Amino acid sequence: MEQKVYESWKKALAGTEYAEELNSLCGEALEEAFLGYLEFGTAGMRGKLGLGINRMNTFTVRRSTQGLANFIKEEGLSEKGVAIAYDSRNMSKEFAKETAWLLAENGIKVYLYEDLRSVPQLSFTILQLGCAAGVVITASHNPKEYNGYKVYGADGGQVAPDDAKKITGYIDAVEDYLSIKVSQNIEEQENITILGQDMDEVYYEKLMSILSHKEALAKNAKDLRIVYTPLHGSGNKPVREMLRRIGIEHVYVVSEQEEPNGDFPTVIVPNPESRDSYRLAFELAKEKNANMIIATDPDSDRMGAAVLDGKGEWHLLTGNEIGCLLMDHVLSGKNKEHGYIVNSVVSTLMADEVAARYGVKSIKVLTGFRFIAEQIKLRTEENFLFGFEESYGYLAGDFVRDKDGIQAAMLIAEAACVCMEKGMTLYDLAEDMYQRFGFYSDEVISITRPELGGMDRIKNVVAELREHNPVEFGEYAVREVTDIEKGTVRNILSGERSECTFPKSNVLMFMTAGGRVILRPSGTEPKLKAYLSVRGSTREESKEKLAALKAGLMEIITPILEQ
Image 1: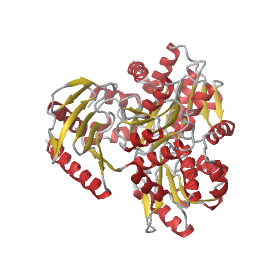
Image 2 (image 1 turned 135 degrees about the vertical axis):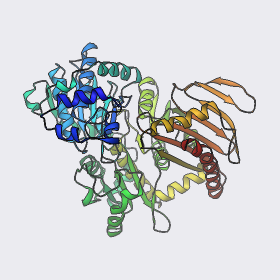
Image 3 (image 1 turned 90 degrees about the horizontal axis):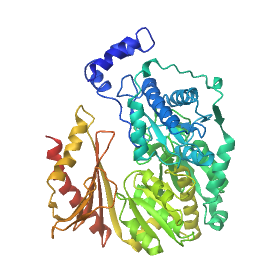
Image 4 (image 1 turned 45 degrees about the vertical axis):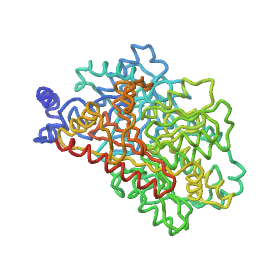
């Protein structure tokens, strides 16, 4: 615990509205709140709301904003300005206003949205206005206790690692953040421009340009029945507007989840990956005899969907299934000359098979949508067709440089209309893809250790397996180990070593006789993710392989976690 820092907070905030809460901190809560400064990584910072240097609060926001302002001024980019958006989380609006005010106070032009907007709209705005950077206040699909501060670069993607390091240096140099005076009266700042529906309209027009099956929409959109839930977030207006524009007449919104609410009272977490998030949507879908359900997370960068299976039950599509469905849909209707798709290294191996069938290049990148955005930036002579991550993030237009749940909702509705044209459903299409491309089974195992010292436990797992590579996971022998942190690839059988082409990252990848295992610890949370992917000749064989691979992995890592 940073005891001196805690004492400085008590002294600086004595007699203020924060004093009582600060003085009430004790025990583990106090230890965690002042454990160390909330880490500012390539995606900005994210943490629980509350007082302390390891929490999201007005003071950590001011500290980061002043550091960002100093970076922008030093780079001579004040006139280009910064775009700011925020989602429905508690304190998002207040943090956004403080960020806008403080940047403007530093002589930097600011473009602040009048109300909550999505992450993809923020990314679009940066590119459209030629801004130097962007900030969005959000913690994506994390629980209600969290909020975050994400920084974007001039290319519309999350800030590049080198710039993130520079910004971190400027933030670390800010020592008097407790005395920074900030006002919520943004109208007093002439450097602030308020953005609204005019910018929305430009974004909507761009979205319409990526549609590729307009005849199928014209014939079938009126018959498609969609239940939609924004999960109390920012997607309500833009998703409904785009579904209306493409001709979907029957859109039924889950009323209990329609209005923005940072407490997310109807769900455990506002995550379109979680079946719990669809509980109310399933009820409404039954009542309205809907064909499909669409959900977006609070900042609307992720999109999930559920479709009826052959037995009339709701099947929640995985991120990998949606990614491959949308890729197949997009590639079937686009000019593929000099085309390429991009997906994260942890996504399903099926993606490579789909790309190969369409004759387009498949590019693998590290986890993080900024790496997909980076490929778009670098490959100006090639034709970007589609990008996705298994974590429910998709992109089909290069006018946005982050995952876009709004365009994904529009595209999956278009894909459903194409299926209707063929007498199929989206579930039928998913089944057909397994027949065409192979029976792939994928699973993401997420292990969280929120207790004090949990981050170290998670890191120990990867460190141990890096030092002592497992030779097998259960019955499946490891054939190749890729250590992306060390930049090496090692063939277990021959002992031959080669270089890894990925940028350095704390990731281990094991290729086995039965498939693939990737381990990746979070850089900002005490969480370890394991990504498993296998291919079988039948669905049953594929599932059996996956279960065996998972059991073998857990047998190895569980004892390390308990040390």
